Image (cartoon, rainbow over all chains, first blue to last red):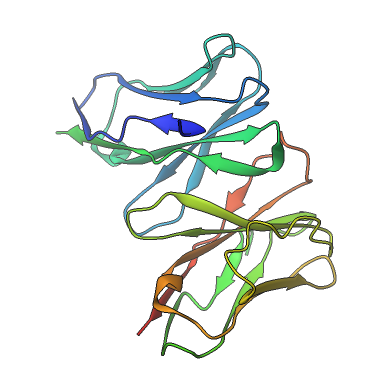
Length: 112
Length: 115
């Protein structure tokens, strides 16, 4: 079992729709959770982070964390073609809290 | 600049040569991290620095890899006797502190190609 798992996709949504990206993690002691966006050929760009159970909203983005079920999700409202990218879930695991452990990423395409 | 700066942006070298990659973190960030991303692979952690100290070097793939940081700022990652499997994008990130809740911000990376 991978430590951080994401559905690789591709996930396609029409422009204006809500895109839902999911991530599960194996370490119940994980503490911090991050979402990065990576455009093709570019480096990861931090878009959200969450530490506590519940929802955290920032503009069109909402991160949701459920530690009991060990999943974290990212919702993108009013999706735009410019949101088309690979979304990486990253977790600081309890045994290695100084580094980020990444999922393999979900490729999102927003269709005009 | 305000972000993490890496150089060179691209490096092509022959197998067996040594290469040195440089990272200049965001000003004021005490923690610095190196990752690599291979084609079709996820992001793989290599090493982190708290100040000039690297407490855990277990993420480095082999003893051909080494890294140092001086003055609590610039870091260099050195790969000796490069092999084709070293071809990857090497990414540097920095954060305000080493605490696990501190977001890491990435540079643009160095794309390394070993012929």
